[in-house]
Amino acid sequence: MKSAIIIYESLYGNTKKVADAIAEGIRQRGDVECRVVKTGEIHTDEICDYDAIIFGCPNHNQAPALNMSRFLERAAIVHVKGKVGGVFDTYTGGNKGVALGKLGQIIKEKFEGIDLVGAGFSAKVDGRKGPLAEGEEDKAREFGIMIATRL
Image 1 (cartoon, rainbow, N blue to C red):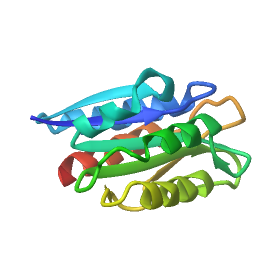
Image 2 (tube, rainbow, N blue to C red):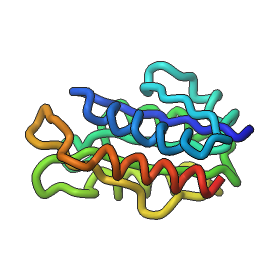
Image 3 (cartoon, one colour):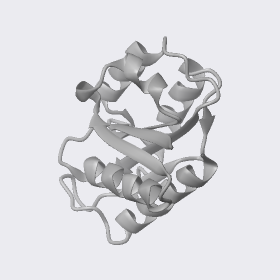
Image 4 (cartoon, helix red, strand yellow):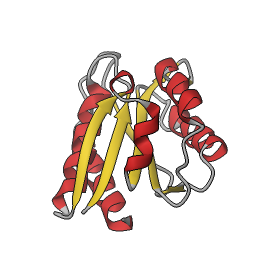
């Protein structure tokens, strides 16, 4: 059975909801196990044990959340060549895809050979603390299905 891991950072819980919805989409396929963990809940060496690695965090000051950036710096030594990858972010206002683009670029630079699925997924949050905008969890599940299909 294939396996996926979603590593996220979340301040108000909205990014965790997106991570959980992506995991639901991945699991819907039936032949992929999926684990969801916060950056501080996993050792970087463990990510090489998965067939798919998905990273997600909120947009903080026009960049990925600091804890995610720190995690990626530590994890950059792990061999992930040939693995499927994915990125997602959460945003407010007109900041769609800002952290997502930067997160994707960091992963491409630091994780040689990872095969990112599309451009990733950016979920809108209504207000600073949320909730997620209507329909975003459904879109996140669709992104999870895309990742599972790539596996």
